Image 1: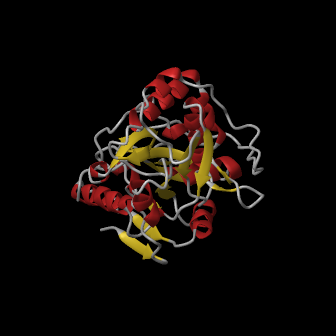
Image 2: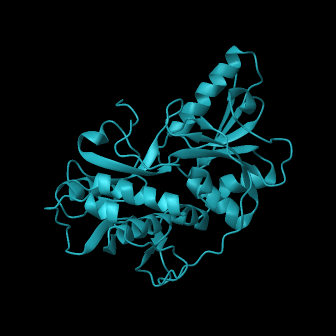
Length: 313
């Protein structure tokens, strides 16, 4: 039977995963916190994307792509050192789309709970804010995918015993940190149940409500593995080099899910945005944007309009 060390209960996060493997190598990031973002990849107009816009389509502001992009934390988005300009991976994605459509970019920091009504009411053209495609959301919104929705298994950087985590048996006998009330916790508990049925050693599940405390637990050896949203842990690993990735889970395990640019249902923007994203994937700008923020492991090979999403619950 597994043991549970419950230090505190964090806020639940709706994240998902289905199994894939990735390389464990990360590189140091030279993070630019300036509002100018001189190293941000820029794109030329994509005529095919512009041609895909409905002839009668009107943006919220003429000649401007108005996008919700939350200033939460890097690598996805935060405020620059001028405390007003939003920078990060998602602003970079928004810039590529705006450039492709021949538009200026305006980013708006909106609380998560407020973007659906704002998008439906026409306050914004799109949302690029870590939104996962779900079947329920597809009833009100259109989607153009740009990143995998993944979780990551992280261990201490010099850990040479745990080389890869790819299936339930790989966590047997380990001390694993996971956030309470999350989808990754449900996945881990399901894996533990499978291991118990197979007669494998128990997993010690540990809970912490502070990222710095759980990272210290890994670095001090109090825990072996931390299972968290990959984007934030990949960024931390690339910056500090004290942890490393040994496996990822891809959206809604055993299903898959993707993060997508979100637009109003039937507004006519989604296909144009998908064409724009695929042009940037093909020309290499997309890869540069992910690499800039340590998110190469979450790359997709092709953007899709309204792919199958996580099922209704």
